[in-house]
Each structure stands twice: as C-alpha cells, then as structure tokens.
Image (cartoon, rainbow, N blue to C red; front, side, top):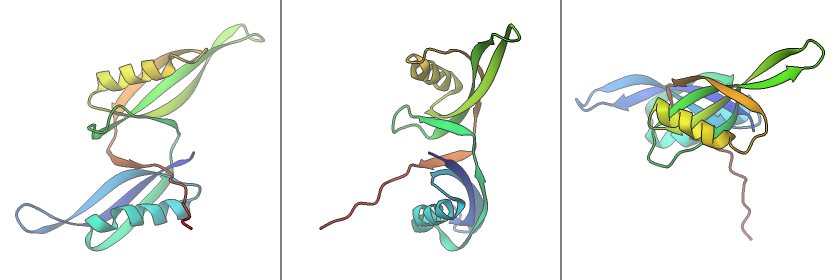
Length: 147
C-alpha cells in the first residue's frame, strides 16, 4: 500500500450561486504517481464544475489506515514511536511510524490507535495526534472482470 496525497483545484457552486475556486486534499491508495492522478480525477469528476487541475501529488509516510466508522469525516495523522532497546549502545531507540486515522476527535483518534496497537508485541508511545485537511481516502480496488 502506498498512499499519495492529491490536491485538486476546481470550481464549486456556493450557496450564494457564485462559483468559487477551491483546493481539496484527498488520499489515494495507488502504485504510482500516474495512477494516483488518474484515480483522483476519476473519483472527483462528478463533483467538479468546469475546469479542474491536479495541483500537487506527494507520497505520504502513512503505513496504515485506521477507520472508526462511516460517519466520521475527519482524518488525523497519528505519530507512534516504536520503542526498542539497542544492545550495542545499551540505549532505548525510537522509530517513528505514521497512521492516518478516521475519527470524530483527537481523543477518539488516540483511542482508536491504542485499540489498533493492542495486537502488537512492540512497546510504543503515541507522540502526536493532529487533524489533517484530508477530506477523503480512496482505497485501492482491484479490477473485476465479468464474464
């Protein structure tokens, strides 16, 4: 799994009737930048008025998606430090890993991460939980063939 953050700029009809240019951020599970661009265009085209532009695509450092439930519309970046002991230097070593967590609040994102980490054998601490500007995550879907 490789998650790409895609920023797409397009016109949106506002409540006043005016079209305003907005830029949205979405995550796309894809194999390449090209696939990420194609998927974000495909997913967002039904919601776009007029012209659009994919203004940025970047790889993210997220290693896993943690979902709460379908009603959540906020996404949080959670930094978890995996703690190990270096036998050579006799010191504790921390390795940062990042999760993208779908939750209603910082507290819920923290708790979901704790629940998610219950099955691990590694010691860890949750360093940060911060809300992102991401609106949606589009997971990879294998192509199906119909016969």
